[in-house]
Image (cartoon, rainbow, N blue to C red; front, side, top):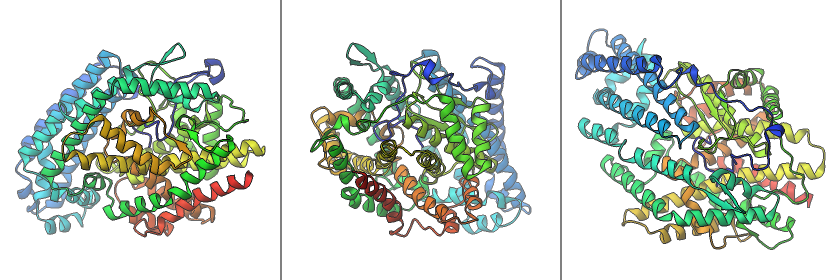
Length: 614
């Protein structure tokens, strides 16, 4: 999921920078009226008023009553009714905040959009704070009693949600403390996130007389002109350095905020709260990270040495890391070609998959053009089950843009299929949420590769895929290592900009290897990566998903006639099943340390194929 843009990990340029309206063709914009007709619409105001009434009525009816309700004669039915009501309120609140968030993403620099989003956040946070009692009281009920009630109808429907809820029980605080934590998030963590976003959107990078925003500047790191790549890197370094004091403060503040929360809740490791949210065991993540770090020499070090050789050098400067291969023509891919390529690739796997993906194009669920102030990168927003997902991309017609489209459509299809589980059980843990997106990329890549007969074009395509996989696996684990060191060091006091720069350079040197020259200026590149701000330790989910999909694709290639059915079962499950249960039909087990070697070998084999090409 490129849900929060991270161009350093997965380059997704978002301004036209050479591509023209004519070469790209008409680009779709999303139709947010499916949620509400407008920011000032009566429908939006009516939903806000209704959800406030519903929340007040729900609180009056159930606060302090769940213990008696759970011990009543028809407890299963009455608990089921209460959870259904709670789910309906969650869906309505989700619709409101999703709409506000998408409006904001369409132009983060528009003050009216910022106010609208901020006001919506405050009202929904206040409402959800009042409703916190429900989950807290449910978790105070006797486990044996809940197990017994959830084993019978109609409460059995919510058994997975209740099981997940109780995993949070050891870290649950007293009601009023939970409420303070929740309400203060708007003026605490949420405010710092918004400051980061709006600062990034307002930055300008001066390159050869042009004043560019972040994403087109990053996009130039993929330009075929080495001068443009170097100029972009220098501009990034200059502007980030000028604003480094702010980014250092944001990073320190949010790391401390997380340390306070973790300490109060009793989390032992800095990443344990993320593992809990992902419903994945710490030892599984540790095994994956260890396997990938041990593979650095066989993957990134080996590939970048090969790429340097193609460029006739001993080592590449850091701005050449994602440069296109020499002597390969760079063409602009029109939007319609990108759409048809992805849909055809999906159809080659399953007509149903392709039909669901087509709805995003036909029903205006995608926003593709580059606009000033628009959120950078790409994401798929699930909104709520009573509506449908939306996709944001910044399409420039480059090959990686096609892969990004395939990636986000995978998320979108997954979200559509999981929707029937309802607002409480449709959301999928990040580790599995990346499955459909990365699988969609793999289907698209294999489709394009099979149709490519020109040896040089095939080499360029294969190299691009290897780079994407290295960015997804190796670099995300390096990012995870960076975050771990920052959060651990933050426990000893504030980190200076120089300390953050040093940690960054150390982890990047180890992960990229000697064939990438990390010269002056690169030390500040940690500052613009929003995952570190928005979602601490999110990044390892990319590596988890990529290795998992490599293993899944290997099973698929063996032509198991049940694969498609098992795959759809995995997507439809949403958040109702643990990863071990969902992977068992494929004969895969992420808890087995050898599992990770399967996915890593796929990357190694591709690098070997490139080496054989010379």
